[in-house]
Image (cartoon, helix red, strand yellow):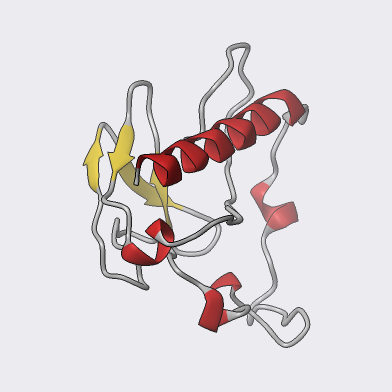
Length: 131
């Protein structure tokens, strides 16, 4: 159990470093990124949770909920809220804000994994942690 948490934290830390180092864009025009409606299908899929759905062990859409749609595990928020996203709602973080969740059984049994997320961060001069 501790090993899986350590592996998850190491992966999350690496992702946070990559996002922090690679954020170079000075402006963001949401309209230029907004997808057309209905959403275009990419290789037959219109939602990330539909790709290899049989292999999906956890999926937190953060669309006005902190519940994992695979295991129904619900997180507890401290200092966060939901805000309007490009499509639906999104989790709004804050300084010292976070969400804590139990580790679903499907995640505990993994030997390796991939984490995928979309993050909008304002331009800043300080490093921000995603996880």
